[in-house]
Image (cartoon, rainbow over all chains, first blue to last red; front, side, top):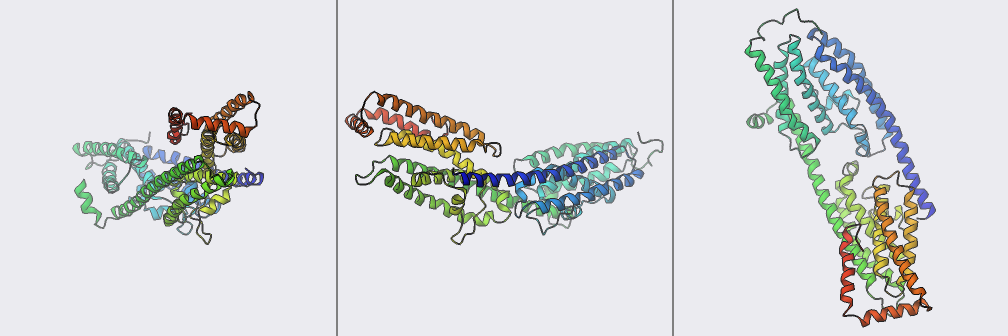
Length: 227
Length: 280
């Protein structure tokens, strides 16, 4: 290799390394935020329904602050290179999406669409070649949501909230019907989808237990305290 | 569940409607991915054919009136011709790889592209005796008015070149008994040694380059051993290299019935070309 060619190659490599470091910095920032959110959202399992809105409100500001990271990323990423770097933040972004859909479900009982999620996270369609929310990441987050809700169905009952499993059951079944419409190939998404049936089974069992004992018609006992 | 799905998918449930979009998205992605994998495989095949063609052409005896560089240059021209088929394929793939799509499907494109760079750099070496540059490779992958089919990556460039060393080893060793073959082998040996040294500093930045470097080292050792054997043996005869060439050439033609065995051995070497560790 001629020495100037070697220099040329080295320069190209150096600029990639520099870019990678800049991205890494932002991803670390996003990681920090998503870890805090995941930590806070863990408390849904021990929070009675009347305290739930306050808990969810406490997570929202952090969720909104993810916009700072996504907008910085869309500045750093060169034109058309979104897919080149996205693996660096996929996991953190999925957690952020998971937080967004979980908060939305618990506060409004609806599914936050992918467009609404992207908007909430400050991801705009104009710079989609630099920063976007791929369907795959959104779908991964939905599966995490179902995993979490199946736990919540159990824990809500322990806290005396007998309606929760029934609401969750309806919602999760609809999501499952949605996932069944997809032609998934043998990848991580497919494996996680296959595990959804266990979550559904768990939720169904809780619904069964609760209805069989006619607990839903009885107002929740006041004695149960937040452990 | 299946019946609910079909009856609901066309209904107004917003959740299921959005999954309809996801299905279209994922199908589009998977279909394009499959198409590109197939194209990459075709390109790999064509590249291998071009490499075999080049090996065959340089092994053919040169015309009496042409010197060795002209012989190699002519071979390279035919190689370029063959490689044009691949360039046409890439031109056709351009719409599939437009904009941000190239980076999305880069992993599917890479294997064929590296094989192409290997073949192209081999033809280039025969033509010029040098390593093809990054920009020269990119230039073969753009339209006449300079629009790139896709941006070439340093990684594909270097990994493709790294495979070249294996071809050069075959080239040097299978030509060693030909006229001027020993001289050529020592040139190739020096060239591969330089490549190895150049790549060494780049290994930390390119995934998989280290693995290829060890293959390069093996190839280099094979050429070195062959050069050593030839040197030691020829030192026993105090004759100029051209006369040694003639002696070797003569005995090869005299023992044409015998050479079947040795040729069979050399064929193994060609058959092993698929395997980068091709045994000698």
